[in-house]
Length: 317
Ligand SMILES: [Zn+2]
Image (cartoon, rainbow, N blue to C red; front, side):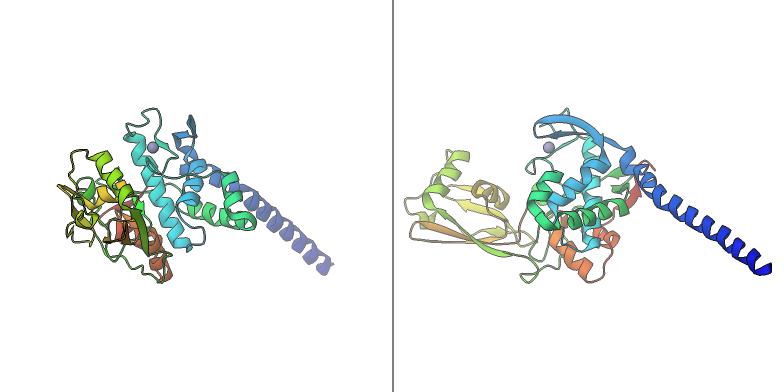
């Protein structure tokens, strides 16, 4: 009789354990759905149309479009926080380009974004596992943003830098947390870290005169570019071109160069620009974040490095 009693007790206990497990299992998605990202509505301009949706539905598409899904989980988490902060900041400072929406899907204006269908196309057989990695990075950092004096920061980021990131002061005006910091990526970590871009003399003339019709260019293209000046991050800060002087950032934009860390040579009608790194260089370096993650840094440490002095907070707290 005693044995029957114990078996019954065991069965009852087992039933409770299974019931608790199932409840826990099925309750988890509900808990996530009630998270801070799901509770925060944003307005986006996407493919030309404006729509309102929860932040939780927008962020995975930004992380997927802006960072390789193969990057380390801590780098993906840092990217998720940067993307969430970027959107949150824009919600209170909508760009002039779209006063009807917080952000758009144009990387030249806000950040890139890709749909589930784009992810299928881009990743093929790896789509499901890559999507899961990105969804985890977003969910693990649910509602977390970077702030400065209580307000979301302008969390800009870029692909890679040569040794030092650029300061916001050099490009867009001073922001105390967007200063030049060291960054660890090298040619071993980054595809096309050092790259050559060729532009014909005619294409350079068109680009320069298109923006500066009064610029006088000598007959010999070899004499067009003077010796550049560099800022503390190693990028070109001032570049004489014929009769005018441009910033390295403007020349980069006019000629679609990968970065403003360049040298230039001319021969036989062609300018060869050798660039290092990719992007404007301000804020978090994505490849740098991945190297830091590989060396054991957490996403919070990565963010503190690239946005020094900022505070990691929960939305609406
Ligand atoms: Zn935009």
